[in-house]
Length: 384
Image (cartoon, rainbow, N blue to C red; front, top):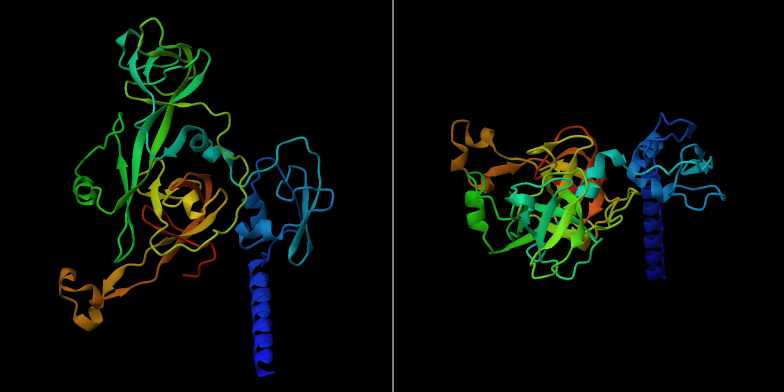
């Protein structure tokens, strides 16, 4: 009997905790409107932010009226209203325009179309020469490609260039170390004064290549294969893109290799501290703000998919206890045991919009301070 009562009390406690957690999770904003008419240019994040304190939770509590088959697809003209405390109802409007997305597509479109991350690129076909022995080629000119044996006229290929190598150093004693190294036009590592010693120390011992970022330069159409003793395939560059040079690589053109709809949700798992971090900031050296794109150190193999939301945190500093040890001694004279770890500091939220095997791209949705390369990624509800 005592054992049964103990089990019953445990079940009740778990149920109460679940209800309390859910009630907190669906907490509404105090200033939310009673109704809202969806407009063109809205995003799901912005709309849910009008109702919820946690915009990434909206797919879990959204309730469509019976006539709406997919509550995740909200269209301009739909009327959103609070049906009751923890649900949102949608009154269907006209279906004359495309549904709104989770993020502003204009902010991420270049990264959807023009950037990708691969495990290796040495095996890809490459540009071996250009029309009239030019140093650069552009729209309307011809590039000659090695490695496209069997290519047929009419086939289309994107010309890409390796730009960045992402590396992780697995450290058992503490957190992983991540590296973001620039590559030259042929994909070889560019060693400079900043990363020379880092690269020399890491080498191949305990390090893992997370991927190589490829940037699209142009797109072309095959007009002639390797025929009549010619050892290169002829490719006509036919879009207004970046200039092509010898050493650029080729990948087949895909009709739409990415998602256009992004539904915010929490990560499927909590990562070990130091495993999920910001790798790089697009078009910047170190810092990012709202609507900036960042590269993250986790991908599909880690259970990350499009729409995954992380909170971004500055890693807490380790400071010397000057009150205890004195104000005049140099920091280098103190051991780690003599220092105090300060709390991590919240910076903002980022949502993944493009996922690769070991790396993903995310858009900073909101922030209270700039986010930096190396900042920690946690569950969006992490309290510290």
